[in-house]
Amino acid sequence: MRERVLTEDTMRAITLFEGITNVRVKDCIEFEARLVYIVEPGALAKAIGRKGRNLTRMREIVKKRVQVVEWNQDVEQFIRRVFNEYGVQKVVFEDRGESKHATVYVDPEKKASAIGKNGANLKISHEVISSYFEDIKSINIG
Image (cartoon, rainbow, N blue to C red; front, side, top):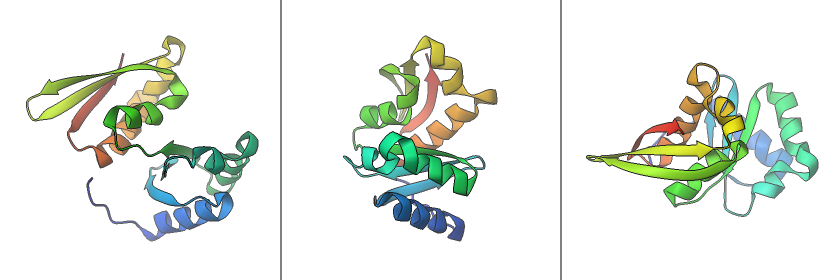
């Protein structure tokens, strides 16, 4: 895992999330239009809240999209969790020398959303994944 320095804004976002959800945050990765919270295994449902109330409340406060990902030390499982909302069908890895490439196959109807406008969602997902698994140098959607 790469070391990152958390900004004051990110620390505030973590404190806010933990206060609303009563779930300990493992990490928070902040983007211009999105906050991605990594939570410990088994804490996802509590973090989201009944009928998504916690996420709705967070979105209203931070005025950004909020994504919660349950941590897993297995790279394939973590990738599946990052792309969960797009209906992951399978993840295929390809070794490219000292690095790995991952192709994530998602529900065909959600493929465009997984990529996002100008590749924004794919870039964010790759940054989240590569924060923990540095050998994953590239990801594409199949």
